[in-house]
Length: 459
Image 1 (cartoon, rainbow, N blue to C red):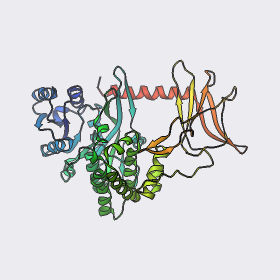
Image 2: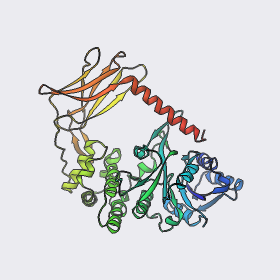
Image 3: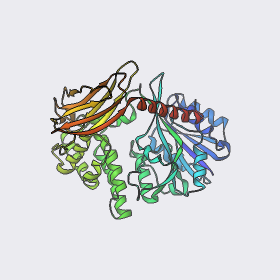
Image 4: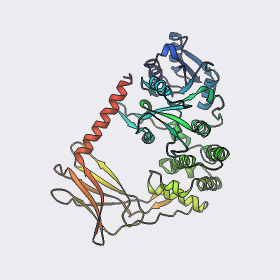
């Protein structure tokens, strides 16, 4: 099995060698089965010299292609055009990320059992806090819960995939596609979605890992800076989301649930922490055009799909408000439930009391009581109200003075608690907490992630 791995890089001298080493150290013979194309996208630091040293050391396996800076889409396309014709699968690795050492071997073993056009390893964040590193799984890793398997987008609408790092595509199938070079973000998810709408199935490689490096001490990442560009808004909707909708209708005769969920999952990003740039970047006329275009997209997605998202209620409320009302934006809250909608957050810190927070999702206040019962005595509830208005796009979505959260602080001997909401003399169990089990479970998961990372052959 022949693999080609394309790695564009721009001023990546800090971690480029680590990324290349993770390919060379593959348990599936690098010298026999792997070609690496390093695309120097106009670097001005020492990363070009690093790439050239590797190419000199492995002249039959590593090639360096130096091009003027043109962005990741163009660099990846150049890599695809230079892949050897006897290649079976083309993979993509970002210049500061790494693959576990068993990635290619696991993929070959999987392909011996299942003939699929695309392969995806489990995805982890490698967060760099300076002296400390933290490994955490991507939210979409629920797809890997049942081990190595084939996902079918027609049967599993929520098995969405849209990031190129660590993704391997069958070369004969990839030849029909190209990254859109007019896009400087989301060019990867556009290609992957178009690829999957045609090929429909892909392999999930649960026992291999792709580690996405995030330097959390560095400010102004490419992802964050993209929100400051006007083309991240209306043009993005037209060139990416509308392309999904059109391709789905052409291929399936309708917008399939997979596309609906993918758009909903991704569109929520417009309403997160970067949402403040919406007013700064776009004029009022441009805001209207964007919102009307977004309304068209969300109407294709549907309110029921939006409400299925695992995301804060205020975000889903804003998306549904735009779906219904368009421009001007009229924010509407969801109908209040008889039992408060809460998210449980457990905070355990060494030397401090364990704190259980119930993050209250709904806007309207509830008049009942919040109760935490332990084996010793009840724990008083601390009601925390918002000190300022919560806004999205300068629109108030939760008013000052509304309940933000309910906090229970447990004593060291209070290791178990049952949390209730009491109204009209009726108690409803909201959650059960076991402090010891939660801490041990977290430690066990963290050790397992670190052990898996070390077994990947990366120090």
